[in-house]
Image (cartoon, rainbow, N blue to C red):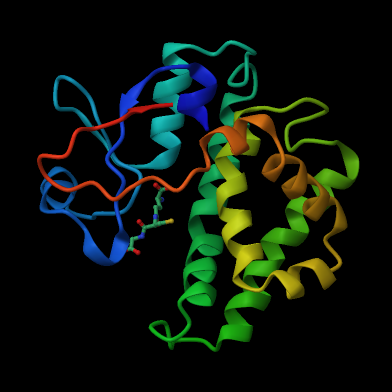
Length: 192
Ligand SMILES: N[C@@H](CCC(=O)N[C@@H](CS)C(=O)NCC(=O)O)C(=O)O
């Protein structure tokens, strides 16, 4: 979303996680997506760092401005315990340290924090969209989609409205296509 918003085109190599290409593993041994390879072979392998790179190129509506420290802090919180609980909840068969319900209940503590913030303003950093929203939104979407009926019945109404706003946004709809899996030698479509 940051790349599309900034309008900084990249070559897209769509990865299917159960069939990761060797080129991904070579570029980034931790092999999570997304990974961005710059022309000088710098590897950026965290989505938040890619967001910072994209808005560093071009930030047409000032989505990065002013709240940098808070942005970094909130993203770090999201990437910590919540991300572990999200992965445990999503893939509870391979994560047996806690039960699926425990992962969900523990993850829901972060949902409650975000919901509380969104009771006070329409977006996470105030009354207008910002980089913070799009840094956090994909993780909340994954959590919600793991059991959408549960999420819809949860008390986190402001968070749910916020998520729906982003899911229906022109920006999200414009990038969320089914892209064909990349294989070595395939032409690489330009994104966005
Ligand atoms: N902190 C990383 C997390 C990335 C991440 O966990 N991505 C998932 C997909 S949503 C992944 O690639 N998982 C690797 C796997 O399932 O093998 C980031 O934000 O870039």
